[in-house]
Length: 394
Length: 142
Image (cartoon, rainbow over all chains, first blue to last red; front, side):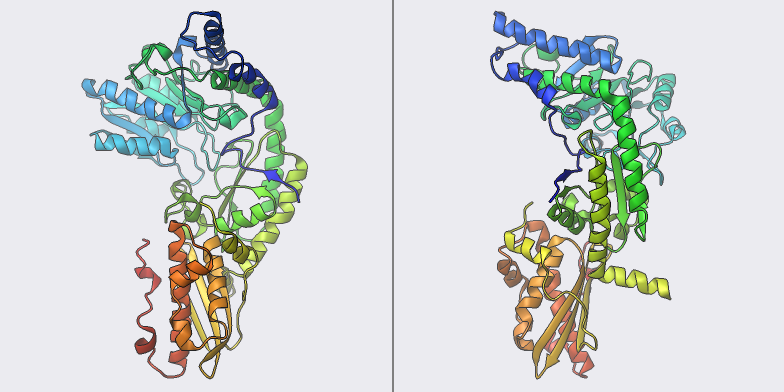
């Protein structure tokens, strides 16, 4: 049986070249970067070299604007809580975000609502794309920050970040973007795109888990996240994850270097898969087809439930994910699919396949062979499908 | 969340899938909004459930509990089938993750709904035997 890993939006395998760059910092260069002796200063040097190179790859003006964290969720939490609490004294108590952000943003917003902040959750429409004019219309005198994800983690839709950045700049409002899914697939330039804060993580782009960053433009007021030593300019104390930071830098560099070729390859694979799967009766693609991450396919198949589809795929060697209630750990299906207007019964039957450079056209062939068989099988035992067909005939 | 080997076995090779033509009783519980629908068909001779089939729209646990429940009542008397609890179905599957317990409840209800329908078709009021089978709109999902 083939084994196909098609859940690269969940996490990716560490690239061998990335691991190779990390290895010295997991072995002989174990010194604390805060120490003065050579083995410490060598580690420090690696951290600062990575910081400078990452700053360059994100188009940041200075390396001192990059703060290393444990990953995307921490960066998202810090960006919103840190900025909102810093700006509260100035009477800025309003946040603008979208309905389909990652829970690291949505749950942080809910926590801030309990602290007295007001949050506007913008519509993302059927195509899963925020309208810049909606952002502009939502800005008030007391708006502290706008936070819109660069690309959605479930349906892969890419947001008009430059347009939103320009609007925020015009109105003097801070702009944060969660670029966890987009980094490595789109060209990011925080200065040109007027991005004030940006979250990203290493493990979505063939780097290690447990290391991410928050870009904070110089001059942006943000509360410290962790009090302690002087690491990360005193804003996020704690001994640095040296190997992780080196891995993050190596992964981002690799992604930037290979972007054009990889995007072209993935887009071709993605489009062939979408076209093939859309031949299945009563199937639909979720999210805009064009403004979409090159490796993302998210489909719904009516009459079946997503978790059983995933389990069947797994039995056939295919690792995928779903936005069904059963996989979300709650009774409701994915908030993303509901935000683009899908009714519950259709959202339950969703499947996300996400690809990386390691996937091949043969993988797509295999998926195109298996998915229709599995959908047919599950529909044959589904009383809901029976009802749908009966209604069709009447 | 991980399923036991038995759950995976019943999911991968479900027993008694399908429909029974001219079934003596048909029960359907759940709704599409919640993401689970179970439909059970029974054939009854001399108070014995001689055949049972199911169709399920739902997650792995929903399919596995349907399959196990049908196995547990096949060949049993109606009275014995009515005694089948969701707990017994769960135990037979070596347990379910906590968020999936409702699937076993649904399986128990599907059997009761099918027996209810059987009684009604016989012109017998099912309530004294089966009790009230809750309609899924009352399950409190939404």
